[in-house]
Image 1: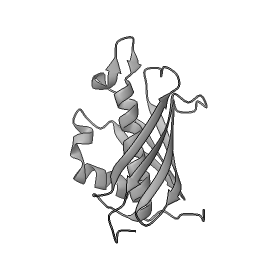
Image 2 (image 1 turned 90 degrees about the vertical axis):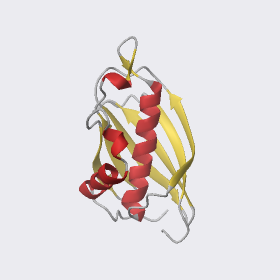
Image 3 (image 1 turned 60 degrees about the vertical axis):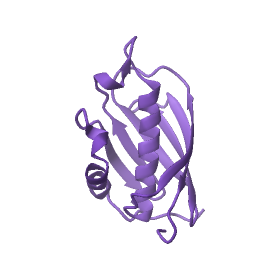
Image 4 (image 1 turned 45 degrees about the horizontal axis):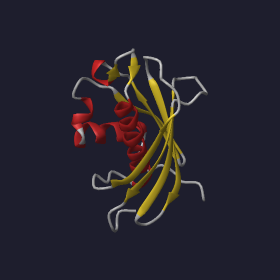
Length: 146
């Protein structure tokens, strides 16, 4: 696949998410894009009590949401602020119990077509190579938006 250049910066994407999806930060700012590069982006989750499960770990639904939001942010960073791009499929494998603390999700675009995009998401603690989850996501892009 040819190199994809991002159209939006980290600040552009975070502003778009803040404006169009304010529910992401209902309990305070917990999701934030930290990097955008050709064909990829990284987002950090700083979990709070609503993201935890008994035993002091980050819940599966919180990891799923991180993968989905990061994949969406990666896509819009490369196609522009398209609020109606929607998830059509997301598969996640939980690989190990994450420690309580921040988690980074790195998403890469595997395919960017006119109507569909396929991305991969890898979640790990900052600086740790051991993944806690891996996901693949497919997004539908509205006609005429790419």
